[in-house]
Length: 276
Image (cartoon, rainbow, N blue to C red; front, side, top):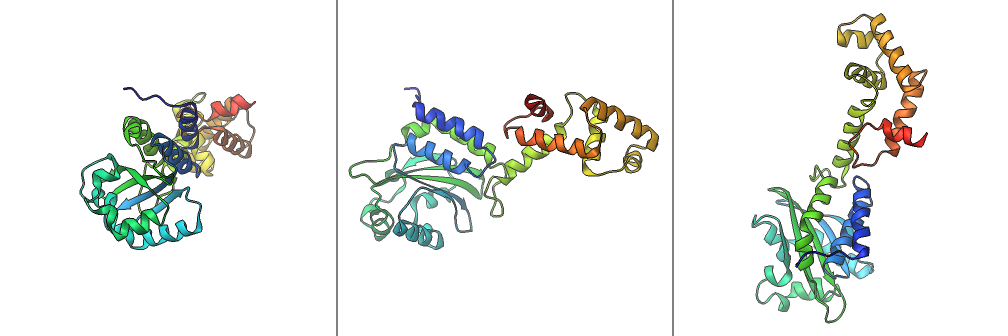
């Protein structure tokens, strides 16, 4: 059977796309995964081979749950069946608790503390690797009596969720778990593309040096030209962009960048012109 998204899930996919590179992304993608699994709760962490997990998002609202999650991150994660599954290096997976837990797991003290005391009845999880030592782990749980987490729809939606996550977390490491790598890559690409819709390649190189604060003499040395030649280029650039100074140039660059979605790959200047 094909995957059919509800209206709310379709809106969540759109919200994820729009939130790539922003602090809101973990919440939206967590909500999407929880909905796909018919779950009440979601807990998103980064798993590392030799380090403790790093929490990225949780919608657990009770103080007692927060205390248990703190204990989980400090030590108890070592007993988590999904963490042990991650360390078996079996690739990306979407699994139910029953598929990864030992046969007596639901009679264990770990289950009593981190499921019953958390108010959870069931769990399913998604492991999404970024390299051999690092993975995102989405834990979807149910608090309602008799309710069980259902991984089937998340398995079908895996290509969507995986693609969204990898667009946000292009560089996931112990020092970078907030998607800043994605945002940084977006900003660099936007800087490299600025003015390409109206400027020649050489003019584009010059305008990027002007934005960085280089003088005409400095730019001339970089391109083995005379300062007078660079001044001619600069005058032509300013005319094409409709500015009269380096300050005005910086202003339109920053405004264009602020209007440009993180998923866009064109000249940021196009988003400045749209607002004019």
